[in-house]
Image (cartoon, rainbow, N blue to C red; front, side, top):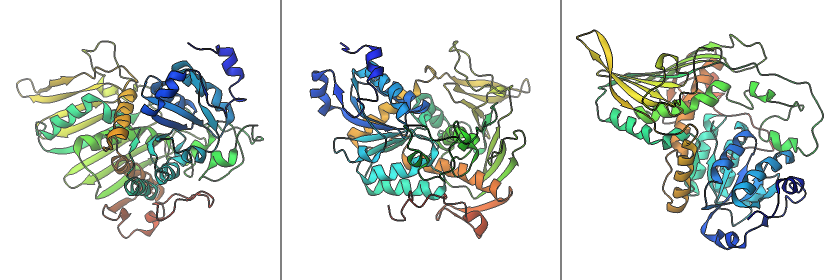
Length: 449
């Protein structure tokens, strides 16, 4: 029953952004029974989240927020197509937090805003769905956990594979002892990416609040594109920003929290584009008698990232799976595939001196559908007040491993000892300098959240 056609909608997108136009009075009256949301950041990932949310009839998307007004039209159109109304538009997310009708905020900005926006939302008594990577530093992540607990908020992080049913089945299998004692686990991100292209300095485009866009990170001269991906003050690096999915999976599978030591190897070996973060990274963590390895490269065209296969009886070509997890036990070996790859367990066949698959669990999920399952968990937890599957503290402990790997790299690929009780390094003042992000004075996280 849409009363506006697409052309009329797009023509009026910005001009009427400040007005919440409800085209269905029935839906409006039913809104009190719905979870009312605002979304902060509607670039590519934000719009993908909106496309999932509008499938639901139990949510009302009241606000779209972005520092760039040009982002409103494409995002609002997604809501219009799915729910028959146009949300309000604001550039400053604090206006969403001031609205008592808002139940939760979805944060889909780049890394730099995740921590501070989450903390401010918790302080405003809003629940939060926040994108990964969670934080720019270990200290920031811990403050996010403190805020969630202090204000009794549901904070779900988009490490969405925790909501895949086949993930829990793999975890149960490992915990049953059928793999024996777990002595080694490997996490991979071996794939091909391109250089980070940097345009020249240009005037700030009309409609972009560049000060707000930079937020906690330095306000450098404006350049279009993703130039900021090169810099530690804006980004944790392409490797850890994506590998966090597998890292969180391996933690979920093996049940470990803090490592005793971390030692990174690697550097910027392939790209000559001015990036500060490595394009080749191999990291070793020691958890008592269990060793965890990260293996990552951004120059591997023979590895395959997407493993969702049409034939559900097949599994990824494990040796060339770019995003797999391997769990090595004293009785068996598990290959686990992200992106809907399912998992298989192999055991030795002494008669033929080979290993054979003894358990095979296909994913039975369409590629990209796990986010729908993840939002189901989030909305349910808003109503029940239970902790979500990807609770903020679990995500923090996973992200902490990413930060440890990066810090080892930044101090010269040294082996570092870590104290999980204090979340600090053992007698290493140089490494401790990187425990906290370098935020602008205008946008700082307080000691007491």
